[in-house]
Image (cartoon, rainbow, N blue to C red):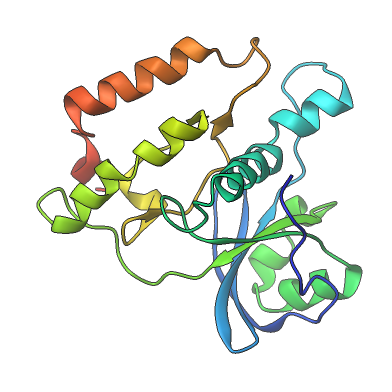
Length: 207
């Protein structure tokens, strides 16, 4: 189980809105003089009727939490993916702090309704490498970590990396998982294709 962020009760210091994507809002903030990243997840609703426990399990927050928890269990936090500092359930005052720095368009976005769950990670400013860079070989070799941990990465593309670390695990499957959504054969297929092709579309993915 992923641990709770140690500073979950504190005000969010010097928050800066960075981006919003398919799964949530992303902020940069300071904690004990360290630059951290806060991903606030949109409320998730499964596209078909399922039990609430299943819905929470397959949600982007659930998927990202399980992936980071597995990496922590493997003592690999920060080695393949960005270092994770835990989860938060945001208080009203913390949400207000974040919304104030978003600007009117983002601050009034309906996705803010019931957006409470968040994950705290290191903030990495480095750009992702191209296939010709030495760091790209680090990216390929580091996939031994999720393979060993039964983690099936999704959305492995250049824009989801900072430096040689992947920063978005919201679509990642960590086995065991509901067979309706993913099977062990998917895991084997992913790593077989990775070994064979080595992410051939990498430099095209954010053009």
